[in-house]
Length: 104
Ligand code: SF4
Image (cartoon, rainbow, N blue to C red; front, side, top):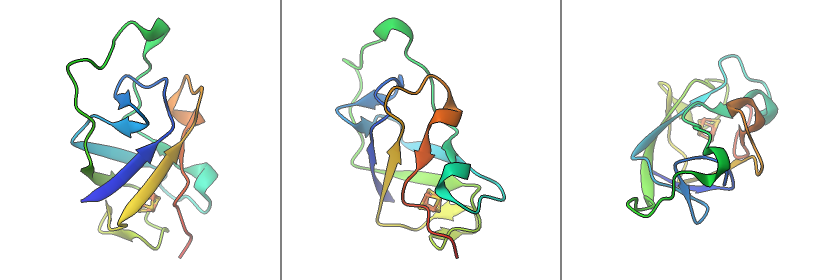
């Protein structure tokens, strides 16, 4: 389980810079740089229509990840103790990225 800090406050699943999902998918097949990655679980919260009042930010969650060139990737699963997903103001998944990506 990985600790996740996430600055993608436009996402439906974000609450207090943390994620309310129990598992996320990071995309980035063939990624050679963190800019080639993105959060595949991003859902835009249009106009702030959905509040996270019934959701609890998860301290740790499962991270499946397609960025197999990252040193933390083991069998498409992230083994990092902590990751940062960034993309403040993102309106599409492509505007997000895993800042912890480290090329192997
Ligand atoms: S740290 Fe590496 S393996 Fe973990 S989610 Fe980010 S890109 Fe994927």
